[in-house]
Amino acid sequence: MKEVELEYLIKTSPKILYTKISTAAGLEEWFAEKVFIKDNIITFYWDKSPTTARIEKPSSNSLRFYWTESETNSFFELKIEELELINNDLALIITDCVEWSESETKDSWDVKIDKLKLVLGDR
Image (tube, rainbow, N blue to C red; front, side, top):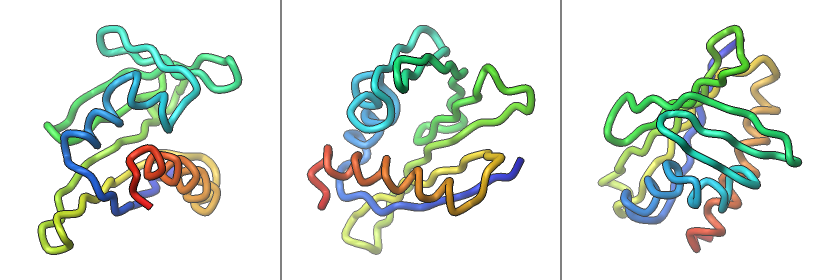
């Protein structure tokens, strides 16, 4: 298991981006087919199969999702950083605990982030 950190520049407001990464409706637009959140448990559906995670909020601009089926305490984290020097763009920093290669992880996130940018009109 290794942690892979990726950074993507996003052109939107912090409030809008946070909504896209922290709400069921926002995550359904780009991350999973269906999403349900109850208390601090989130259920993601891909190909009609549910996967659950426990949500933690390490800071006001980040969310960490711990996979409940994992015996290794694996997680992924989505963190928003404001980049004042670059036209007020934002960086979405993703830390993902994975068992597969870094290139496969990057490819998977690239597809998701492309969809997120399309939803946000950031092309």
